[in-house]
Each structure stands twice: as structure tokens, then as C-alpha cells.
Length: 313
Image (cartoon, rainbow, N blue to C red; front, side):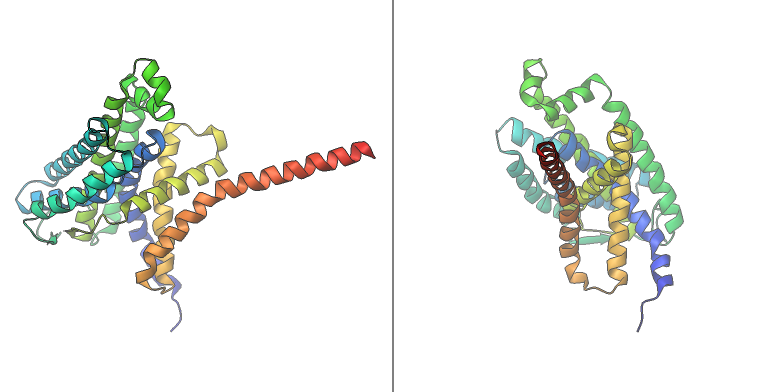
């Protein structure tokens, strides 16, 4: 049975909707990975925390708005704990994230009353994003992405935001200038995981349930979006990108990632290999800047040698 192109085209809106929802999470990863230079692995846990909190709040009769606010707060607390493990207890950044990720697995089970998953139906509750209405989901996700980008652009232009950026660029120099880098790390980690949990709350509504494993591998997806967006932005605009444009390209990277995954599924490749394809995609985009620089240096070296030979002749 051959491949149907219309099936691929029909799946594109759903891929875009997922890309936009996960784009909020990718911005959170961008804050730690690119701005703070902190490899935070809390993400895999806090994404599921956001989904669990949002779904349980909705099932408890609360509005979707308050459910998402609580998901955001839960993510802020998760990031705060990671930051305190690192800054107060001196635990290395990667280990602090791993410890919090492990702790959140049990915490998420408690949030969902011991269940591995909880369903929430768009026919019973007024969800703002859902697989049943992809077009509305795209519009709502676009609004969330726009608000998050504007808020981040504003915050990282303030004195506190600039201090966080300085901490990521050069911690030693920032400390010498009187910046409390511990506070900056804690704030950045809190903001990052708050956005990740917010994305988890949206995604749980979109797919119709929260699951204890829904955040597994999300750090890889976030990194894929950040890296794809960075490579694409540099290829198109180069050094002309300002901070807001970088955030936009992070979201574009997330959309591209899900479009690629959509094509992989359309080609009927084994779903068990999706994580493998994700790793390959990330590896390719990670290698592009290095290979580009290597090729550029090789051409420059060859040009210099050729020039010397011409001078001798």
C-alpha cells in the first residue's frame, strides 16, 4: 500500500499545534541552556508536573486559567528546588537536575492520586486546546507563544534579566561586578521550569490526559528546538538576530522538529525508533555549525597556501 500525500498534508496542522505548544517548553530550555549555560535535566520531570497539576485542577472543578496558573507555579517551585540544590548544597548542575527529576516522578504520582495517568475530555470540560479542534489549538498556542516571547524580551532587558545573562556569559566577572550569581541561577531555573510546566499543562489538555511519562525525553526535544532554531536563524539572519528574534526561531525550531517527526511517521517508520530519530536529528543540527566552520577553515587554509605558491612563482 503506497504512501498518501494527502494524509501527510492533513497531519500538518496537528504537527504545527504540537510544535507551538512545545515551543513554550523550548523557550524554557533556551533560558537555561543558552542564557544561563546550565544543563538542567529537571525539564523531564517538570513538564509532567505541569500536565499533572493542570489536569487535576480541571478535574477538581477549577477553571482552565487557574489550572494553568497552578501548573506554572508548580514549575517555578520545581526550578527553585533545583536551584537551591545547586547553589546552597553545592551539588553540580547536572546532578541537581537529575535528583529533582527523580523526585518529581514520585511527586507527580502523588499529584495524580497514585495513578500513572489521568484523562480529561474536551466534551466534559472547556479546554482551550484539544485534538478535537486543531485550528483553535493553533490560535491559542500562538497567543501563548507571543505572550511568552514578549514577557521574556521585556524581563531579560531589565536589570535583573541582564544580570542573569551576564551570569551565563561570565560568572566570575559577574561576581566581581557585585552580581549575586546564586540568586540569578535560582531565578533563571525557576522561570525556565515554570514555562516548561506551563507547556506541560497545555499539552496535557491537547492530548486529553496527563501521564507520568509524558515528560520523558522532553529535554532532548527542547534542545532539538533550540539547536534547529539557532542554526536556521544564523543561516538566514546571521548576526542580525536580536533576543526576540532568537526566541521566535526557537519556536520555529520546535515546529520544524514536529514536522520532521510527522514525516517520519508518514513514512511508516517504526514508532519504537522515534527516540533514535530524535537523537539523529539533534546530532545533525549540532554538527552543522562545527562542519561549517571546519569547511570554512579548510578553504581559508587552502587559499592561503595557494596564495603563497603564486607569490613564489
